[in-house]
Length: 93
Image (cartoon, rainbow, N blue to C red; front, side):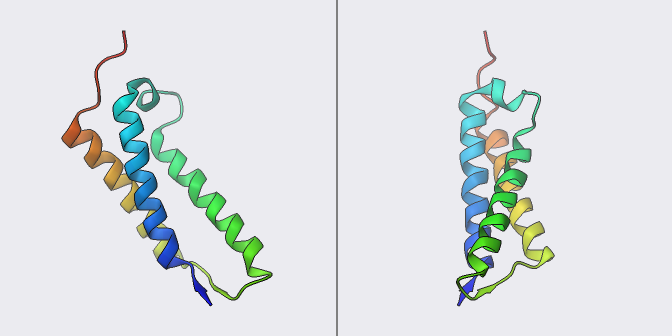
């Protein structure tokens, strides 16, 4: 049996770190038309779709809404902390 929350929260944390690092390296990405934290919502959606597809073959404990919010907020907080502590990058020329 797969417990989805044990996979979901670490994935969202790693994605928050990766998006924060990419936004730090490319300030145009952070200032684009789509805010970087929306990519975390997209990743969450892909995880849910994958979970639904796997549920037909494997026993999976589904995600509760509390875990979804915890995972998303942890990713956003890590993204914001990276930009705050390491700076938003050099301005685009």
